Length: 92
Image (cartoon, rainbow, N blue to C red; front, side, top):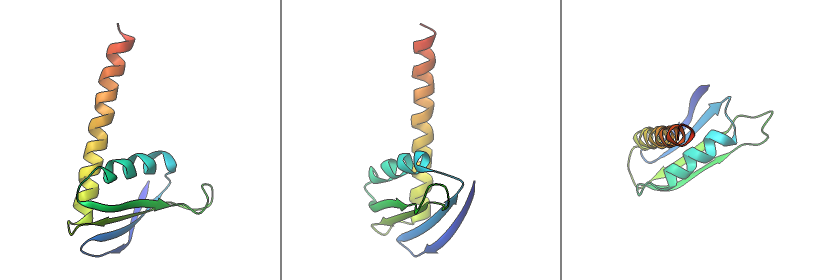
């Protein structure tokens, strides 16, 4: 995976995420939209096999880099919780 910040202001960011697909971007977008600081979170992917997705985040003034970092931490926490619940279920 490679990241490239295409454009960033105090409250907006376009982030190209090379090598990823809808799977990660949908989850990240969903977590971002749950954040009260986020006004818009979306991504564009022209074609899954020939283009890389570009994530767009607009905040209420919060630094979009910090907001994305927080969303990633939340996503990791949700995945850790799922692993724990799944492990308990399969070992029951």
